[in-house]
Length: 245
Image (cartoon, rainbow, N blue to C red; front, side, top):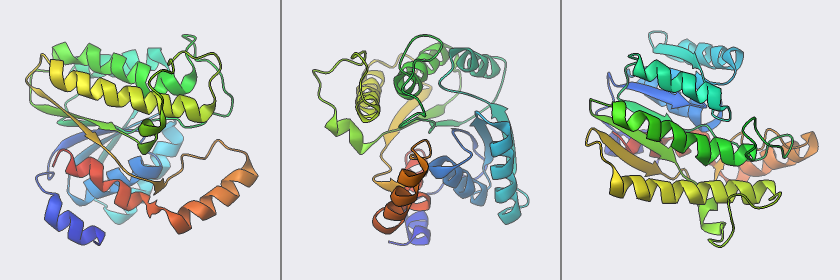
């Protein structure tokens, strides 16, 4: 099915919505923002790099000159940045949907963040769940929280600990996405705030920029393989929109 046919069949009720997209300057997050601009949504790009976010914003504005796009600083691997994000919302940053798209697959170094957690796990599940748990009591209007799942979650073995001693990059990623799946199930069952709707989307195997931190020769080979064998990020991004439209 073509993108336009899918949109016409499955996606509506986005016009005018205020949507925060984390990790919005590239890959699936960027494509989500492009689709949102097409639907005349108000977009807030929550990104680690203001420069890359500005370039992404300008690309969208060339296609949709009247798009409403703002940028706020946000680094999901950093707890202090997460606290700043939480405080912005508590102080009145208005939204209808948050798409938690930001994530890490393989950082340049298999290192710990400032809070001594493996950086992939901190970004993909620990800090994400921290944000959601902190925001839940303060939400007083109907909103949707969209979690970005992954097929890799099915490859994580339940017996493996999130705090395994020096797990590989892929193991960290798979574990983090498995934990996110379980966290989504938990929140769906125990949600104490009826204003919040939790959804989980699955983009499938896609040609994204997730391998950007690999060595150059691997990126070159990998990007060619992804383009040939995987679906585009434009198609993969549609699951996020369909999950709240």
